[in-house]
Image 1: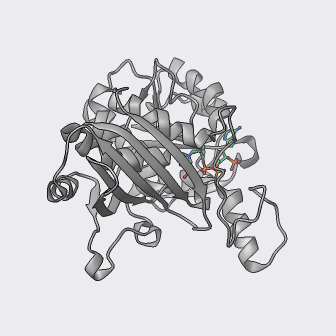
Image 2: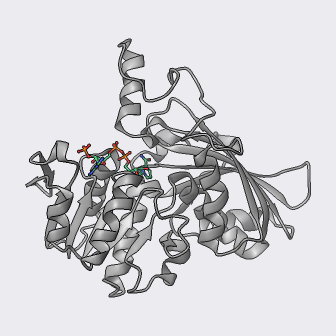
Image 3: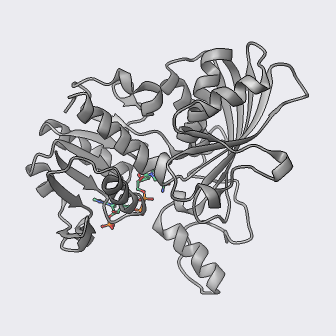
Length: 329
Ligand SMILES: NC(=O)c1ccc[n+]([C@@H]2O[C@H](COP(=O)([O-])OP(=O)(O)OC[C@H]3O[C@@H](n4cnc5c(N)ncnc54)[C@H](OP(=O)(O)O)[C@@H]3O)[C@@H](O)[C@H]2O)c1
């Protein structure tokens, strides 16, 4: 496969290269792409040095697959140009996620909807991916009615500038700010921009994307997204009301048997998911599984994943793998 990685110099891009290498993705030619600022820069993949190129050169090279993580504006402008040249784009930005003509894919859940005609495929938001991974088997059996999620999101979810802000604050350096307030020793109930309805864009992604991924509008999701001073890994407190009652042991068993999900749940040994353990792992970790005692058919869970891995790079590359394995590119 001739593969282009667009946004190769960014936080997600760096993890993309690592994951492509780890999974030995079948690459015959690799194009590393970034903004004009980075053209000519050298990056390494599998011990070989590559020179970063610009978007126009990458389109002209007609790769079979282009993996995008270069922000929404770049995707809106360039993904259609790649698609026109015959390239299949898997995009990490929010640009195409809710476009009714584009698929929003978590491979374990709905990769089977992909066809050769899908030339721009959207990767869901990082917080959505880890939540739906745990909800999918439970929704299938017990049917969700309503989900209430509160997130505890790391600064790496914002990109390089935010990680630098936290590092600067810890080192006592007065530097550039990615957030309107200090993030160290703080919690900002503010991920992405505020919308007219009082929610943030991140909160509305959590509300809308699961319905599209499950192709089901019979349940609803309400969210509060909070940025906390962890370097990497997003955590979520998730409360789910089901239509039918469940058996807790069965819930644990189903999650345990779900590919890509790991149950870490033993209060006797203080075993529960934490971002430091999820770091650099591809799985979604679920713990604190317990019945909500205030109303029937309702479950509480704590879900953690590495936002740069399953929340971004790993999910994207799993989509690309599915396309290759099923001759869809
Ligand atoms: N961080 C996460 O957890 C996460 C999770 C899921 C999805 N995403 C999405 O992935 C994308 C990248 O996020 P990130 O955290 O990696 O950001 P980042 O660290 O700021 O990196 C941005 C990347 O995009 C490139 N870029 C920016 N403007 C460009 C342009 N006009 N043309 C070509 N390339 C351009 C940058 O190239 P230069 O180095 O040349 O500027 C860099 O490679 C965003 O759309 C984000 O929403 C992020």
